[in-house]
Amino acid sequence: MARQVTGAARRVADAAEVLRDEKFNARRIELAEAALETLGELGFARTSLREIAQNSAFTHGVFHYYFSDKLDLICCCVRHYKAKCVTRYDDVVATATSRDELTEGFLGKLAATLQNEARMHRLWYDLRSQAMFEAAFRKDVLEIDKSLEAMIWRIASRYAELGGKRPASSPAALYALFDGLFQSALLKHLAGDKTAMPELLDEVRHLLPTVC
Amino acid sequence: MARQVTGAARRVADAAEVLRDEKFNARRIELAEAALETLGELGFARTSLREIAQNSAFTHGVFHYYFSDKLDLICCCVRHYKAKCVTRYDDVVATATSRDELTEGFLGKLAATLQNEARMHRLWYDLRSQAMFEAAFRKDVLEIDKSLEAMIWRIASRYAELGGKRPASSPAALYALFDGLFQSALLKHLAGDKTAMPELLDEVRHLLPTVC
DNA sequence: CCAGAATCTTGACACTTGTCAAGAACGAAT
DNA sequence: ATTCGTTCTTGACAAGTGTCAAGATTCTGG
Image (cartoon, rainbow over all chains, first blue to last red; front, top):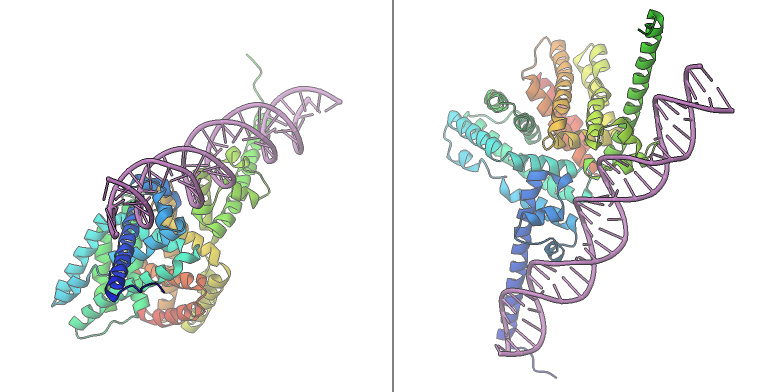
């Protein structure tokens, strides 16, 4: 019977495989991030593997080394997307000690993200609507929606708490309200409507006291 | 100089041209409706002219006879879409004489449309998100959004009026709220979540008194 | 230094796509 | 019946696409 691998040798071999897996996953994430850039630029409908490759450090064949197919890549993108934005307002929530402070902080971040991350947001709306057609995306998209709903709930809860109250509406309703206003503002903003931003901020400023 | 056409002959010629234009437009609408069927089935990303043709009485070449290109066809579809759904609840608004009656009527129609017209609604969300990428769609999509906002406003106004009140929120906020809840319910419904419908109806039932 | 494994590039294949134009089919006027 | 205009079909073209596999390149372990 062949000599068995010693415990130490086994641990070394295991560690090497774990490291290899980590490198593999890191590359998958790198490719997913490149894909998100292109998806954000062109949208789901017009994003090809060759187009993604052109905006990355690799050529189109590499995707088939790391992903079973294009759909697998896009699913990885959707899953990775979550980590990008569901804690956007948490520092405002954590540091605000008055309603005015929370309002101004929240509105400041809202304005910044609408202005500076418009592509990422429209990508989110694109992917979410694709999830209605593509079953493979739904679980992750629903999970992200849940996280975003929780994010809005943390803001609303804190705002209400600072006034000695509780939010008047459910998490689902508050998320629908703020997300819908943001989406509408984004479409107008992308259409070049200069009033989109001030109207959004104004609307949210007026709504916070009434719903929380 | 050649004899001029008589007034009667001119009128006949003009009438013929008007009739020809009407037939031409009627065919454009017919093609747009066929396209909407396929768009509803497959989504914008996966809808080709050949696919549309297969689900119509024509072959792919006919689209280039009536439309300058595929984008022109899709724009016609978006414009035509408007006529389909922005008066969905008007008869409920017109006939209800109490808040309970309006609520039950509205919820009934909401349930029916979520159940029976799910594809049309996901198409709307698809087209609206495509409008963020494709400038040619934006004007029409913003117009449809305006009409839908007005539709929700008519319901909310009437509901408030039946209680001797006025809505507590703006048209934009109410539309964002109800549209967002509906969109979320649609995604869950399409994902096979049986609780989507009852949760939506319950949420709306609870919200109406608080926002109107 | 070398062998083998891992990683990536290249190029081909089959297929799809939008667009275009020739011409077939149809309808209307004479 | 014929001619002309309208409408539609057919088929081709160029370009793009996802996928696959051969092989080039790089890295690692012995």
